[in-house]
Length: 299
Image (cartoon, rainbow, N blue to C red):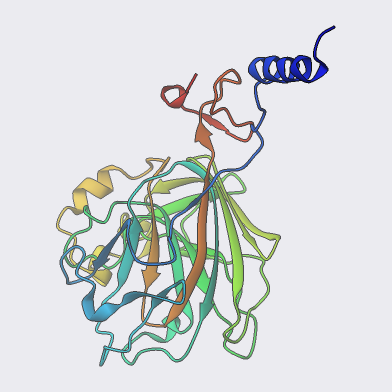
């Protein structure tokens, strides 16, 4: 008579060898911020060299990235951005932010409780020395001023334009349908970016803005269309290069946190890459991928 315990072990081993564990729906979020330091990020502040964190503008405290101005006397147009090291094309981004304290002296009135996250941005290394803003799509973050409505998760377009209702919209900033968030409260934001096709902003679970075809053009690129020149925000020496690219759809780029004179905190910055192996036979196949990368497949 067979030993029932041995027989059971053989069955289990055989079963486990022949069965592929299905984790294709398990989301693998990437922590862009490790909660400890600024590893993986590049800093570019207008008027300063790459990775010169002037006056400790970007710091880490209590598992937060803090954009602060405690060491400044005046802002002096030191517009800054901190770029994650890796560009992405198709992804979901989620994070929490809050405005705190008072705006630094010298900041413009429109920058009170105003910041943002740049999407599909040019790299930190490609910014010119005095350049105030990267060519990018800005997920603009605004805090309430205590009276009136002031939605957040708007889209602003430094050197870019977007399509809404099948029409190219050259307005520099387009308001979302979000509510106003007054005070120093934390606000949760999600963005879904589908390459050069479609971008959606979500605030506290509510979809507040959607647009398509982010592209080079508009403000700072085409003066006649937007009434804005590069020289408004830094000296750009290669203007013709950008002008010649007008109409080029942005399909990928860098993610950057913005510093423009009002203190702001960020935490829980995570990304779900939607680009990957779409072969269901591969070990790293995920059913939520929307863009195929055959070279990434593992078997």
